[in-house]
Length: 115
Length: 112
Image (tube, rainbow over all chains, first blue to last red; front, side, top):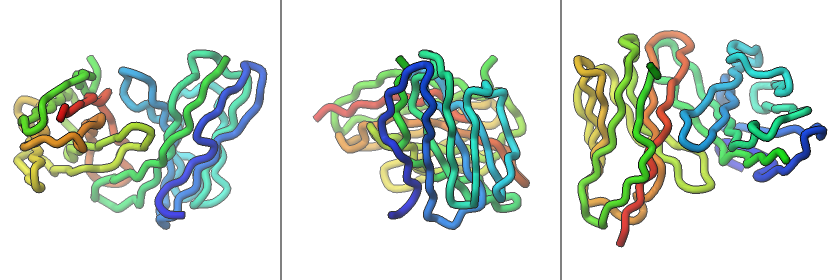
């Protein structure tokens, strides 16, 4: 495996289900991100982990719960979602450099549909 | 006012045309200006970036930044069907951890 991988690629869940999205980066980076991508809207940053510590949480509802057990893996635990949470969920990683560009490498995303 | 504004398109052009994609922004602290390309069923990937003002050229692609107008552009010369994708502008500050702010993306279709 190379780059950033995400599983599953597609997920359909009911509003009462609990599921998890998984992300793995094979680039040796020290930061990982969850984004939500909806049609005609900018990428919405949800969570940032730097050196396995959460450094940003952009007012995301508690029905989304991130977990970063190590620098290569990131999870997004989902429960009691709403239909408006249907979107493409993208994971990204980057190597933070003091003063340098924050180039982020993205996975292919998980297409989530909430019924 | 949104920090970054980008017309979502779609934009449809014939093969060989010159394509111009643009974004405006409101945050004067932005120093890095990036263009990501996202093919269907893929994640975005960095195409090119500039630091501060000026132009940068890479093959058929040219990125321009006008900080006085808070306006950035991506030009694609001799467009090809393989350029069909969504192009997202993105911007960040400099120093330490910097959040990257993305535009909505412009969907481009190059027709053979």
